Length: 84
Image (cartoon, rainbow, N blue to C red; front, side, top):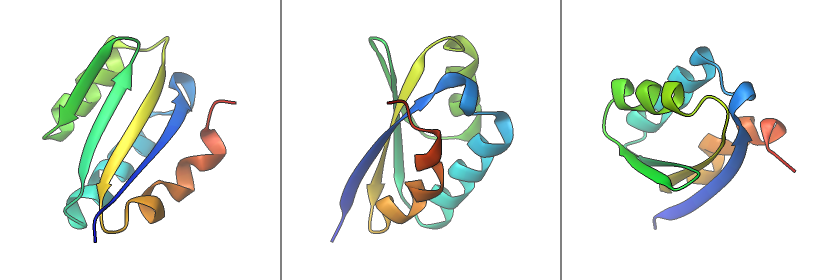
């Protein structure tokens, strides 16, 4: 059964290394990634889209949504970076 899990992350906490790690884990598990910032939403299809989104929203917080069987497990390492 598919899960949908989201976390809100401060832009400054999401560096390129963490972004690539998240993307690779989601791709390996065949999960979908959606990123929201301000009034912009992007369904991420490749790593270039994800990095482009990050670079164009450097000062914003992100809501990252992962859809798939192990969505919560994939986002758990990022929970310490969440915005309160």
